View 1 (tube, rainbow, N blue to C red):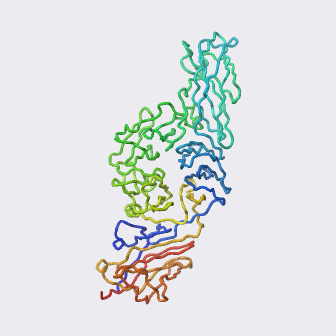
View 2 (view 1 turned 90 degrees about the horizontal axis):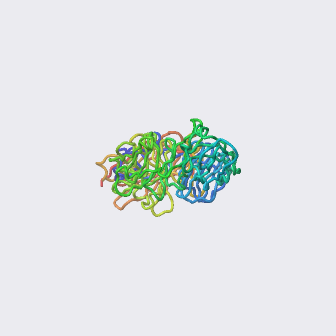
View 3 (view 1 turned 180 degrees about the vertical axis):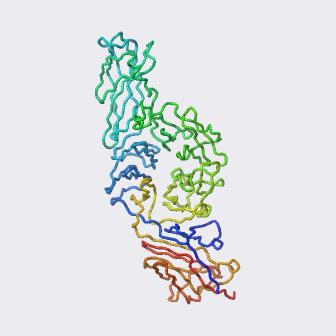
Length: 611
């Protein structure tokens, strides 16, 4: 009697007719993984990290040192240690956040807001305005200044975490003319910048003096710092030579950065942004310009200047150039478009350039799906192929991109709501690339998981039961988090929730193409699985001249309950005579499991009938 070997370890595939799929590929793979060759195991379990629901669905999240930060509805919330989530601020928009950690802040941006969050839960606007009024000045008592001058002020922000930012300077005062006289400053502006939530920063004012009409001073120079935010007067007795020794203002032309940003990242000491109203422009901040390296360590580079942007259309593309993200990988800043990639080269604004990748035909269709892979090294995202079909694309930074999901492309095409493709979320965690995509005809996401642990061999499954709407990871601890539609956060856990699973083989036809169109009567099934004694359901389906039907076991049921422990071989023999057809498949499923391994191969013995 012939035998057919049945495997479960290749994951889902939809690039061939079911009966023609190689051994091990599956038509259904729900809540299983394929890390060990020849086996299918239960997916990782997850445990909820808090008790109280956050009410709104979680649309974005990140880890910042020992805290978890999430965006839920119009709120930002933070959880430290074993406590519950605490609201950071409740009056944002409900747009997903882009999070970037830089120095001692988590910088968060979305289409309507930008903010800075420290690890104590203080939240500050990421935009700090320059002084809106100029100080006044008048001649005072005898002193060293001689000449005609203008007076200027900047605000120095010192946050509780010791990070620092100095604004640009105010407009200049009216001319102050003195002849060997002190300068009496007045109306020194007070800064209104404060926290949205938590401890207000310490604010100092820095005073500068520059040439007035016809004045001989060679630039705008530092005078002194008022170490409070209340004093409005100052007596200035610095000579021009003393000012020259103090140094010129580096922040003369600084202005606040953009109030909103579709995309934002830090690269080589600058903050780069792409704003909603000018998507063809890449904006950049000024690099930290302290007096020494120690001072530069604490300066947040969030100031810009009027012309601190580049028109990335200079890279040579025609038509609309609409970026789909910003990502730092290797030594370059990468700007994906819908159909290709642009690379920013060099570090100095005077020397950097933008280069297009001529042969890269796959770009990024969903900005929140873009992430970095370690192996193979490159960038991965949800994309649209040149013929408009959704796929998963890999870009290694050279001249071309490729699909890494051809085995499941038809599954994605048939199930993804193409009109909402920009809502897809993707995240790399270890060897896995997780994708959430909006499902056709349903207000929910399909959670697709791709095992990329074997070069060129992508194994896919769907994960259910988590209601995932956001994903992120902690790069330091290697923890992986899922935010859900019902307002909970789950973390990958060695002991978590009971899991339901389902595996369905492709259509089996005897293991030999010469017998595909012959009736086969199955007489024996040899199997081995470890469910730790839990009951597993087994169905066998057969295709005959009428169509597909479930085989009935000897007791008249269409479902057989099996169990297993370790790797012991078990036998179901003397199978009913109705277990016959041209093709057949196995459907194996269970509920509330904490352990499962399907060991391949299983063995099916059959007879070829006189059909």
